[in-house]
Length: 501
Image (cartoon, rainbow, N blue to C red):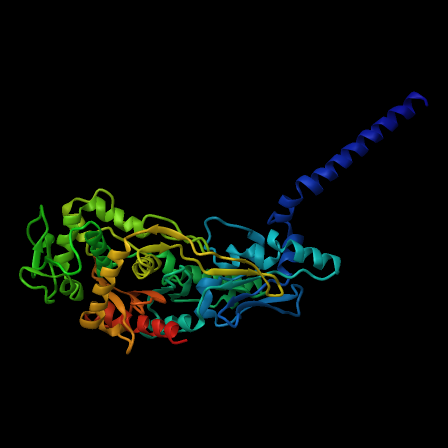
């Protein structure tokens, strides 16, 4: 072979090897990143045209999100049943979701956190994908079954909507104390995810912009993303700390009185009062203090416990932690660091810088119902194949033993008396022992206060723990905003839905 031919042959060989190396690099090493690149329109189109799995609730496995055939280029349309009731749980899936991929700072609901399952890309669905490929079938996503009790969810949604009216703001969370299952989660105002899942992308953009610019923040899941002063519902944390630390038992007398001047203060700024409630003139029974939600008692008690121990008790219940992964982001409930005595007294009644989400207050209540054990809350119950066969089931997980079973038992007795003889009477259920606590938190402005209500039932064998938060109720006169009056009936309806399915 002469030299020119040999040179050209070697050059062609080098080009061939370079081509093979590039193909190998692109199809093996870079395949995954290229496939997931949001600029890859073919991959996005293919993903969006695929039949996603369903999101299911209840014993009957009723779909609240499913894919139905469509007569356009995308083949399947995502459809949400009872959209306003479940929007904050399901979220939505549209072309822009498929294009953007994962987003650590975005609000991620079940459509996003369980996307790999619903799209069929999850490794746990490998066998299903293999069978579909061998049988030349179009791939179908797996299903996600939730812990939500449809009757409890409906009771929470309707109850909250009736109190708030069309422009109110609030949230409800109901938990199963023994497991941490989320039985209901509602946040209002809500939105219609069907409008965000439309194949009319220009219309989706308009709807999305409108929701983003809405001052009432309908896209905000207030159940897990809004922290507010929990008011008098936090007194159960203060009571827990006092009993757990051995300062008092449920049968002891505690500080009472019409007013209490916080240490290191003078005048009205440091004066705690009970707004006319019956809190005695000296020491009063613990039950009376909780039944009448005596600010003087619990501010004094908080100072006796001390800031450090009160913060430790709050943290044991879940404050200052992240614990809910099925939907993100989660706002962190906080108890203030380095509080002085006056600040500790205010913190003991759920004011100053104490802030909590409805989920957090539901966890505190559920822990008391569960012999002091705090369970990790979860809403994804099962991962299923497209044929509804169970692939994986979530197992309950204990976060901490916040208080002893003895302390929990004493608190339960006290909270039952609050329903039977105190401010939480709105939650009474005939023939059922109910434990509960009301709360009203000042906003620090001229705006109306926030109303809270927490409860669990049956008190002797708890099946459900509830937290109700009323952030804004425009149709309710300021003087009538109270946790018992507004939140009690909602909590009662939810508890009845669970206890009497």
